[in-house]
Image (cartoon, one colour):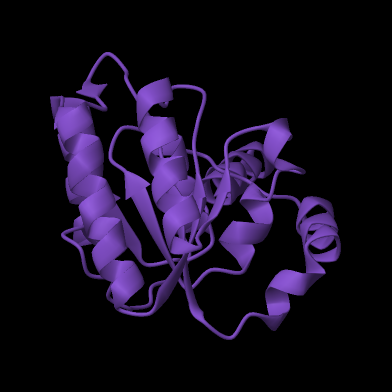
Length: 188
């Protein structure tokens, strides 16, 4: 997915959320998708994920949790209750204040992302975060190929209740494709 974050948007997020740079705890952004043609964010998947999040929290990780428009209301409510109980940050919409998504990507040490969204996975990859893919129900050959590609490139691993750290060159596919197009146009 051709994720892109402009220098201006990054500077604005750093300015708007400057206090995040002062955090000394290990932090992970948790990006929750939801139901789609290929995946279902079932109650069982939510319970499994919350149990895994509880485990990493007990390992000393501070969690910054955000949802998407596709996150089922019941799942969002259950995760918000977990976040409140455990002291995690939580954002689901304007009622929770300004959108911290980009700032959280900039100021996190790792990402936990549900497997259902190419865009959300690629947003974290654009920033070079070690991505821990959280399983939902369902799947498709297209997503299987994406997940396998991210694993083979050293970008992602499956999330089983532990966060690991590793590094890789950030995946900036939008920029790579733009460079190819420009080269092609210039060669004409």
